[in-house]
Image (tube, rainbow, N blue to C red; front, side):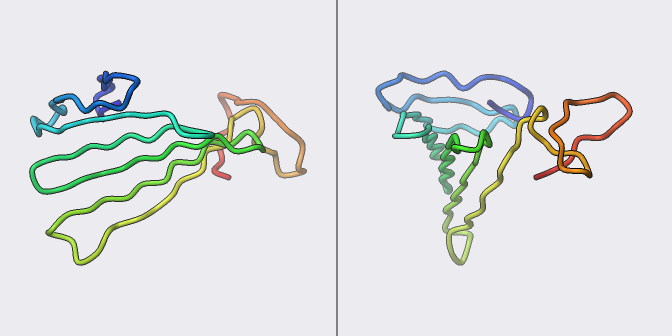
Length: 107
């Protein structure tokens, strides 16, 4: 999914397809299932981004990102973990659901 919410559609067999992002940049995109998750690869004129999405046993979703470009001194790597709102604990440690009067908390 792009920043504007548009979907990236590609074959399930991992074959790359052309795609244009909301900023007008063109990419070759492939997606493939791996044990426990999904790998998305975006290859552009001078950069590549690989997203690996994994479903963790505790119910969280982990996004691992690697960005490679000749303009970077080394690959940029980071990971984010997302907890379902219904599993996020309150201050006392009890599971709670989302509420309009309470902001969501990060894990």
